[in-house]
Length: 209
Image 1: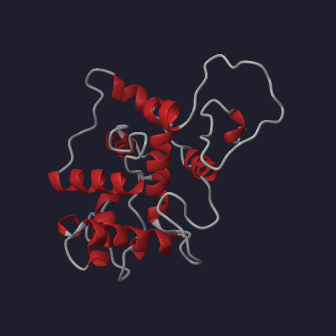
Image 2: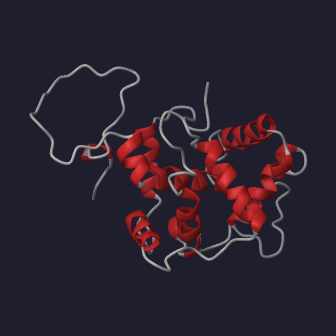
């Protein structure tokens, strides 16, 4: 069954590759993390409801499992700063025709779109809904974005930012994925089980050039 972490026909490697493809903007993911690590590099504060929405969506998309999820990895701050710098072409408002009903509220930005659509799918206030209803609302949004005709959905950009932020974070790159600074001997053929983790220093995971 498709999940928020694995829509139909995708894998984590494909999601990471797609997410990194979104980074053709003024900053790279590494530069966003570097700025966050600097004194005074935190993003501008968001309104309380928007911050809560961002954290909840990140948590639903990549929750804590055996390893920390997106919130503990700092992805909400990554996205807030990425939006400030227009990463993944978010410097322009989401298309008005991508709002249900075809009309965007005046001055609506990317977080406004996300809250608007999730409130509709939750049948009211998404943040006040029960966890199961929140999961269903986001799952429905995800399914629509990856169905035929959903190619322009802003959720694809949102999901790309969450996945990119997570797998380029210290937690995502060294705990969720395996990392070995100095690889050992070369083994051309080794058994790999369904629960084995990918390697964050496997350069073949990303298309270059």
